[in-house]
Amino acid sequence: MAAPGTPAPPAPVAPGDLSEGGSRGPPDPLPEPKQLPELIRLKRDGGRLSEGDIRDFVRAVVDGTAQGAQIGAMLMAIRLQGMDLEETSALTQALAKSGQQLEWPEAWHPQLVDKHSTGGVGDKVSLVLAPALAACGCKVPMISGRGLGHTGGTLDKLESIPGFSVIQSPEQMQVLLEQVGCCIVGQSEKLVPADGILYAARDVTATVDSLPLITASILSKKVVEGLSALVVDVKFGGAAVFPNQEQARELARALVGVGAGLGLRVAAALTAMDNPLGRNVGHTLEVEEALLCMDGAGPPDLRDLVTRLGGALLWLSGQTQKRSNPRPPLEAGLERGRPAEGKHALSSLGSSPGETRSCRQKRSNPRPPLEAGLERGRPAEVKHALGPEAEPRAGSGRSH
Image 1: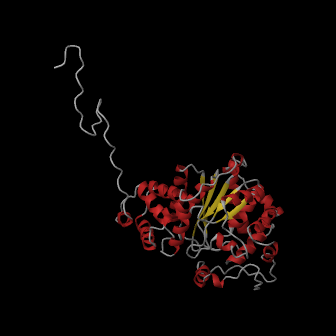
Image 2 (image 1 turned 180 degrees about the horizontal axis):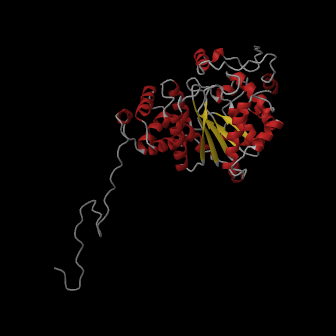
Image 3 (image 1 turned 135 degrees about the horizontal axis):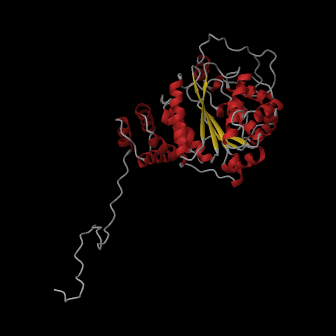
């Protein structure tokens, strides 16, 4: 028994007891990561994937431990069961962090803008809009995609120009932005590599139209770009990925919601695509039409969409204060052919000026618009089924 006034000795504490005066035991071990079949089964049965689950899946995709069949099975499980906004946000961040984050000079931040489209037949807006925005003083570090399903991809169109390279390092991208204000590149080992793998897998697993997969794919590329503003052109109709407006509206809400949660200022435009955009369909022909538009010509519907989307970006990024009509700078630039001033960037990407000029040879007998009764998606589906071998390369001298 202790003498009066002497403090009693501390009572023994069980290991791990965190009560006052106790010693801290070893921390609880972290849960073992789930194996891929378990993750696939969880999502297949309608369960919810945690942020750690999603991170582990994306890591396995990038390091090659995920088999192709497992990637396809997970994509289909997500396509059938969906994802909530938190899961979609976690997938977006995991894809973005699978590669390098682009870093730009601080002074560029208000000028960094981009646009993305969900795709449609004859959609060559990016080819015109990127240089048009650059002509207005913006910086456009566009990481784009290839064709999915029957829709053509911006990268596929650019690669119809002989020598054009869509794979650029972050250092090369910065040089291009300094010199001409815009660049259009693809995913690579350094830039969102996980999205590149999943993007290709979606095209062969009938999961192209999955809303969470589309949302994560688009926004992961834009998070990496470090943008001040993004406009997403969500298309619907017979020549688009989504045939009806309600599906497109649901995707638009997801893009804006997830983007805001990741610190992106995102606006979504719903545009009808029951008709091909412009007059030409096919990679090389669409490049030709885009070049005409840059020179101040081109079809009215293409010019109108370029100025509407570009005007929204100028307002979102603070480049113009006219919210009601932010289009005049772009309209004036197209009239004067100012975007064409940036076409010498093609030589920086491996294309010679002669090969670029060959894309612009005016046709003596231009194609008439497609007949209104034509089933709009069919020509693109036929072209997609024929494959790239049926697509003439720019500069090949084909006449029609």
